[in-house]
Amino acid sequence: MRARTDGNRGGLTIALVGLLALIVLLNFVDRGAIGIAAPLMSKALGLSATRFGIAVSAFFWTYGLTQPFIGMAADRWPAARVLAVSVALWALATLLTSLVASLAMLVVLRLLLGLGEAALFPATSKLIARHVPPDRRGLANAVIAVGLALGPALGALAGGMILGRYGWQRVFLWFGGATLVWLVPWIVLLTRLPAGPAGAAAERPSPIAGLLARRTLWVMGGAHALANYGFFFVAIWLPLYLVKSRGLSIPTMTVLATATFVAQAIASLGWGQLADMLVRRGGEPSTVKRRLCVVAELGSVAGIAGIALAGGTGQLLAALLVTGVFLGCLPTMVYALGQIHAGARDAAGWIGVQNAIGSVSGIVGPVVTGMIVDATGSFSGAFAFAGLVSAVGAAVFAFAVP
Image 1: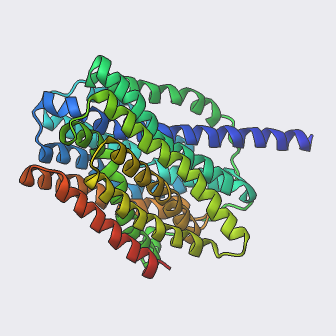
Image 2: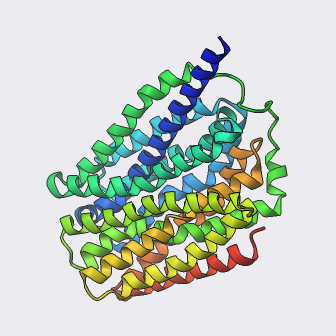
Image 3: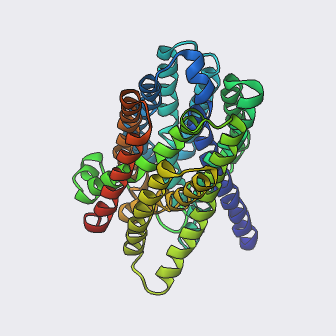
């Protein structure tokens, strides 16, 4: 009887992690849809680079500001239900984006999208800490990281194909519909999840004031923001840059952008395995991940510079692949570092605050990039600034992160 119970719990754990990885993937598909649609959408709506940057930035206004509070909610209330409501909201916002006819309407829907997606990483961290046994959490986080890395790749491939054949509206319509379908198996799983945590007794989470008093949280948030800048820069602006500045066709843009994000996805697994191997050989977990972040930030500087300086399509593809490989390291290691410092008790609240601070790059970066492009008529200055931010990030991970 006990073996059957353990087997049922194991099956539920697999289903839980699988569905979480899938919704993380869909999260980045939906979030990045505006970047894929940009070549046609910005033209249809008459958006300058700055106005487009404002629309992109709007997502992070609510995504960042609400995460600490949503993280606290996921620590105190059933995180699976918090996630279900949030997914429904962001799927609806994605669907309605297919109907936008003005910048104001686009900004409102981006605000709703950010509010919905704000629950994802705090709730995911809480669900893993609560329902996955400690000796399986490393694998669970690796599976989630695959979903995170494959999202931009799938979004670029599917979105580019939809964009070229059906127009930009269908990108949002189909992506939002796919996210709504995910809710069906999730609601079924909700009724079967056990009430108790896996591997430890439930503990009352720290109050928000207690979390905010911890210096390490602020340092990790700042490091997260610096790591995010290059990641967001490539994910948001790459399709528009390839079409507008490089003069590539939408099919060619789709191939190059997809290749970049596939490289990121594959590299994410490789970086994760490398980190585990170094820990097994005696490395201290947080030290290993921090040093890998330094390497990844420096590699991102080289890749971003290579994209700007590439002379032909071959060189451009090589630079994009290098950039994807190093960017694949950062999200996995940054979230893992946050979980290490937070512990299972405060996983949702800590990640909520850390992600909120990290979202500053999403608020400021797109507007800065748009202003640089409009002022100079080129992406060169934007690439230089992104490389500088990544270099600063390497220094922070090397000397400031505990």
